[in-house]
Image (cartoon, rainbow over all chains, first blue to last red; front, side, top):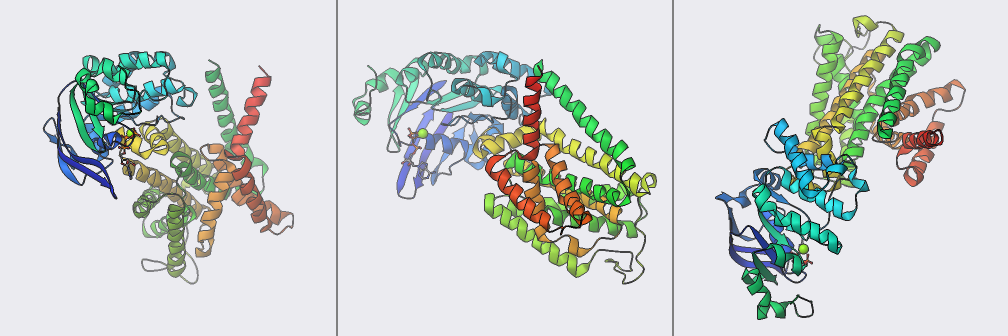
Length: 238
Length: 326
Ligand SMILES: Nc1ncnc2c1ncn2[C@@H]1O[C@H](COP(=O)(O)OP(=O)(O)OP(=O)(O)O)[C@@H](O)[C@H]1O
Ligand SMILES: [Mg+2]
């Protein structure tokens, strides 16, 4: 459970997050909103890359803001970035090992965890292939595997569906949709693909100009007039 | 399967090269070249440290030769102050130099690119001034131990008193040093470095302590420089403060690029160019400074057309040759 209170972030004159207060309890929660709404900023604050001007974040009783980014990761906060970030000269397995390296569990369990997550994302055959040779979807899956391998508590995904083809998104839908059941982590999913959000997120939050303009069950939120207005000009599914 | 075969043949090539250097080379060259090659082997190790930082983290270190000087200074100091065996002194010199490298990296670590390079260059300049002020110990009295006449005796390892034996000894140490550093590539630090290189934010997000692993790389590079310095003290027996100016550090970095970073052979080529080429020129009566012109041209060539250096070109050549013979 993520409890955010009075969170505000400024970049110079831009208010990226404007006094946000929200309790996130569901297993998979969607975050949508037009470009520049503050979605990535929210994840950056949670993972420690942006320091808020004010506010507090309480995750399962831990004051997140007091930890450095790598400590948050070790505590169990995993995230992916809007742009895929696999290390090209490492193999798929080694990319995933980076997360295992920093986790406290013992060696044998680590390789078991690696095999399990490789199977989960469908990269067993690619384990020893250098990441440089992967296609964008396989890179995304490698990154997701790295996020999941060390038994995280919270997983923050920033537009994982960006740039993927339709059938790749189907695979992604399966992988994201079953995170809670298989790994026990709570997921916060940013994406512009409303269909993806609709199919995996029980609740969704809509950001616009740094404010939460709607938060509730995904279907209800997507029918909301304010939300439709915020998306004016962008197709929001029916 | 093919990958395995290739890796195996590469391993044989490496062993063959090292065996020739240790067993055959010392037999067929005369005493002057033994000295030159010893020094080339030693600077190979120092160049490998520079190349480590550059290839894994993209960090430019322009103070490596200064650190070699520091390692040499400590080695000489220990030699006159304590009765430890050569190896113990060498290890202590390497460890202290590694520590110095780490401390110097502390302020530099938050910088990137040109700024980091400039800071390391200033550090090298600082060393140059300090070294020429206090001189290298040569057996005189007091802590600095500088005697104007009759320098004391720099001991060599018992098994390597002669120049030829010392060349072999140095090569063995250099091989161990390179293996130690190369082993990092395939373990935790190597993975962390690769991730940092790709994106520091992503590395942090994966739980990697970025500052720690950057410092580790600097420390390792300093360890290699310190080892090189200690070996150099044993090789030359007397070190001269004038041999470690800041400019030499720039030169060594440039040659590491020319040789090719990220591969031991690149460091070997760098050590060869740094020490053997000028000696060859001297030998055939050409001004050794001409080698600087050649280095400059080679650096341009490396930057413009051969990002993996000469080592990269050789390995491409061998790969093409391997494909033809399949
Ligand atoms: N590091 C930064 N420095 C300055 N301004 C920033 C920074 N990061 C974000 N911003 C600004 O904050 C606002 C919110 O940006 P953010 O990246 O959070 O939007 P987003 O909802 O993720 O948009 P998108 O859908 O395009 O990814 C934007 O106006 C952006 O320009
Ligand atoms: Mg964004």
